[in-house]
Length: 277
Ligand code: DGL
Image (cartoon, rainbow, N blue to C red; front, side, top):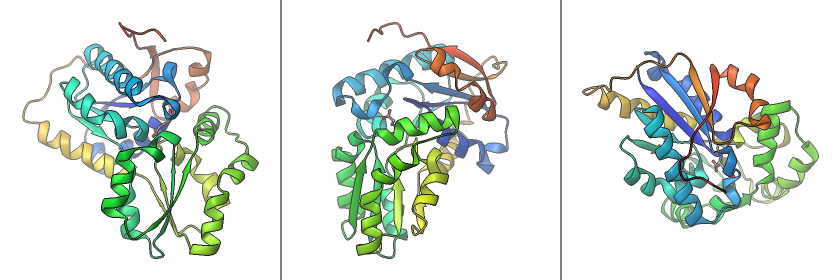
């Protein structure tokens, strides 16, 4: 049994947790799931790079020291594209990052016109540009950086309702590219966005390929754990799968039902020694 910690600023981590919980290799054993949301610092997509790097390392270190996971999934493109190396250097356990799935999108697109949906931060990262230069240099990339969609995904998990008119407005550049450049592929480069899949599919039925990182990340985690089994870490089993929040407030509590769907029954506050915002 492995203890797997999935970290994000908010509910985006749940789209990655869903992929992990559906992964056949990981289903072969009972896993202990810890979802950890840095909701006190949400949203990450509008934070400065330096403050975000420090924050992510501080929160992950506190989670590691208090809950002793075997592996950590940095289930946030905005954080991974800036803090993955720093997190790996600061932590004892392996860290699997989630970065924009530009390479598989470029491989699958027939029209070589790809939409990239991410946070404003991820859209502008040098890391993202390098992925485009290395793997999609022959593609036209239509970039949309949207924090509004991040908020929508948060709302979707709490109430099941979002503002479809606003979503329609945000997606306008993709509709243009479908009409003029036969855009056929969209990368969901923010872990919040697969939570809006149904609305996205309804609004852009012409898109053939929706690409996110979930499945590849789950396989990577299974592979990392299979290599670790030589030296299993002895821990006292947790009574329940956990959901940790850096601020366990009423907005976090609104997620109780959604979290139960992921078997996360025990909601706790993560103590941060150094924090103050
Ligand atoms: N879920 C995060 C990502 O994958 C970002 C959300 C935020 O802006 O906090 O980029």
